[in-house]
Length: 434
Ligand SMILES: Nc1ncnc2c1ncn2[C@@H]1O[C@H](COP(=O)(O)OP(=O)(O)O)[C@@H](O)[C@H]1O
Ligand SMILES: [Mg+2]
Image (tube, protein in one colour):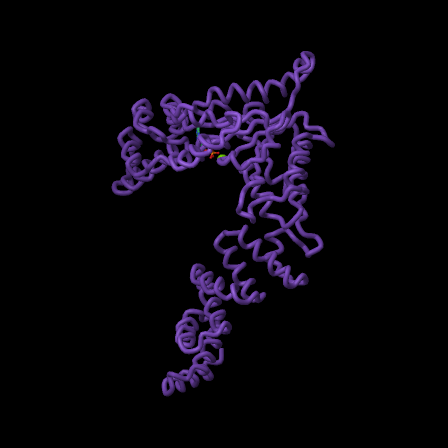
């Protein structure tokens, strides 16, 4: 670094602190020398007198390089609103990626490619799996395999949900294990089960356990994964997922967030086109391929967004409400979640009584909070202390049941958009008479 130049400029600035050009010059030298902290303080004074776009961009650059991403975004959002410059978009995209917001970043990346189809950036490309603009969205076998797992949980790890286990057994597991018997009686095999309900009540958990129950492979994929991560070609991505299942039978495909395919959602970025929906339906129907040995489970927190075509026979012809656990189920879940944890005698009956409206995830969280508290106490004398009933009850006071909000909106759909009694289960859970 040429410190003598910088020093003489700084000296000059002492005599004329209002010389904005000079100050800007100094800020740029600091940026070149990666001293973003110093550059920032000069730029702020420059901007006070001369708030040009270029100067604002330089300040955003300084913020970005000091991991001040919120400030970076504030400036860039304003700049992009008036000018679609690749520089601005590129920095904004990098900032979003640093914050783990890949889906927003992808949208910005697409915007850059729209402006300049020849644009290249290796970091973005490797993240979004594109090698050039002609080859966008190639989703390989390897990508699909990332979603393939062998679960280690089975129905014993799921508390309550007795009726749902029975239904899955009859509709999904038995047909797979006794295919010939079903055929002999002319009973049709196929179709999937759609689970819906408030978050944290075990939809994903029971899907995983279903695969574990029959020692099958498990593919867990959110619709948003398919829509967001790869540009274009969502149809092909979907097909690849089903192909992977066909090559790894028996296999449970669990498709989460199915509502993201909803035809009547208004957040455009998240809504798939009709072609993706059709592709999905034809994969479900297994028209061109063999779906034998593939079990389909779907889940959603927002069943009301789902296209009615999904509910035709052979598709998701069973729709099951996964309610928050009742008292018995909660006791069960406490026992499951406390297994292998350092506990003293714990009265799970009392815990179940006192955790009204808690979801399975809430129960898990209450145990986590109690354990953290115990850990803190143990640091004092270095002696680990087991969990007691009281610790978990204390944790209850720090939380509120997370399912309430869901019921607030679900209630309206169940009352006013309850075609053919689809949501009767919600009403009876809420003890509302039709
Ligand atoms: N019935 C249950 N039995 C045991 N654990 C449960 C149960 N329901 C929820 N959990 C716990 O809560 C976590 C979150 O539940 P999850 O299945 O992801 O909910 P959902 O998919 O309905 O939003 C699970 O990973 C599991 O640890
Ligand atoms: Mg889930």
